[in-house]
Length: 454
Image 1 (spheres, rainbow, N blue to C red):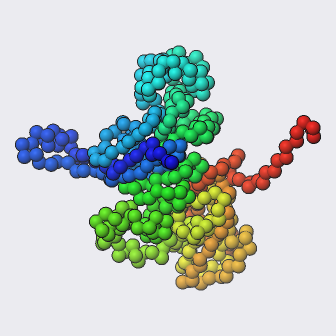
Image 2 (tube, rainbow, N blue to C red; image 1 turned 180 degrees about the vertical axis):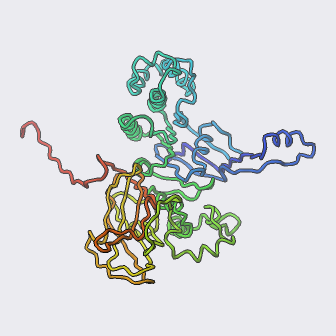
């Protein structure tokens, strides 16, 4: 029978915001108790359970309350309302090294923090060699931590937290510390803890880690719980929130978890939960823009744009394998880049292109209708084209930039009619990265030969 090791019941966290620092004092001393603050709900009526041995992820955009709920669970913060119950020893990777005394040596900090976690000196004696081996900072463990580099400080803090064999491990964006070799060691240790039945609660923006490590995921947005369920389903919903696709988000919720969002006030619409503008003056204008793909995308506000104006790329979008507009694509799945172009002059043979670059500006891949041998007719003023490039995503997980253009040749010279550099970002979500920029999609076969066959 399953046992809830963490129970979060109707937790609300309210912060008082004051326009000026003096307003706090005025409110405190006011005989009439006049309010001078505004209530900010970091969390609003959030509930969920974590079972023993389960790995649960909490995802959401910045400001959704992820770190706040972890701090409440670990006792760093107190909820304004609601209750949290925890059974077992917690090791928390929140703000690494937050409990360290800068004047103490590394060894002294290990024992001090171990005592704070509830371990005896004898227990810490037994764990010490493993912690020091994992941290791998040499004789610096005998020096005050204020003399450490930031890398050494983080390695020691992480080694301590992850090697005390906790019953509950709570991780907040901590798996990106150190160099790539140390990160690999941390991920391996996470696998070992999972196999031993450690309960793990983690917050991360790395959807690959969510897909790999989590049995279940809780999705938060603007302090409210939107849904919880299988990692794949929740990541898909998260993609819709990132793209501002609240109507599609509502449809997906209705399909996966029924009507649980529309409970408060009888008919509380998901658009209000996700920060939408239903019933606002802008909503009517939004309806008129529904046919524009770009209104559902995250677009670079400082896009580099040029050309002679004979053509205009007036709409664009990225569609995932299910045909949904999104800036997030799962590695290994098909996706489509769609462009809509209108022409302000006659062009004999327009060429439509796209390029994917990394954050450093290196061209990684791309193609155009001429390379692909696509049939493109000559156009006259007022004509338009819709072009689709469909392919499989084989880039490694990470952040990339998409550029688009409409070009051609006039009197033998390459001519740019309209080019949009670094127009869209595309986030590739992966639970298996290989070496280099892209994945060769290798098929691996092995055959064991025993000593008799060798």
